[in-house]
Amino acid sequence: MTDNDYIEYNLPKDEEPEKKAESKTASNKPIEKNEKKSSAFNQILNGDFLTKEFFLNNLSFIFFIMFLLILLIAKGYYGKQVGKDIIKAQRGLDQSAAEYVELKSKLETETRRMNLLEKLTPRGLEETKNATKVIRVRR
Image 1 (cartoon, rainbow, N blue to C red):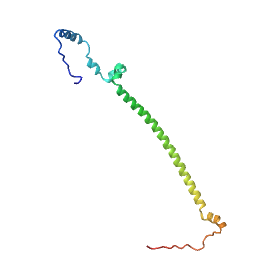
Image 2: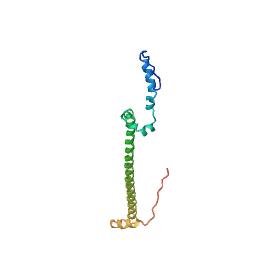
Image 3: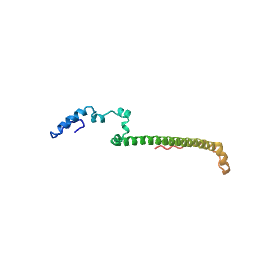
Image 4: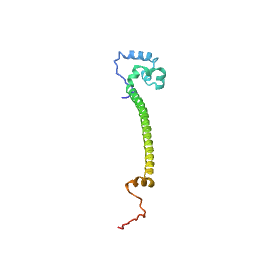
């Protein structure tokens, strides 16, 4: 049964006049169902959303909204941490790239032909005077 269905009770005949008398006086009062169906905008303007009854009726929704807010805050902190980690990794990568270039240039300078001749002369190794020959094997 929905909230909009009309319920008619079979009352004893002695109570029917009271019901009629109440209906005459009740016409001046607003219907209770209409009060519950007031719009959210009206509830905010009237301050009805601050009442205990409203709070208890919507407690699960309020907890859900609070959970979403906590997730939003946690997402912000997580995003900042990931950004810091990215910057730190980028600095490490830049430093490694700089070290690679430095070591590569140092290797090139140390393995030049003239430098090798100077280092190997005391050991008795000399540069060849004849051109190298290439042996190729066909398969």
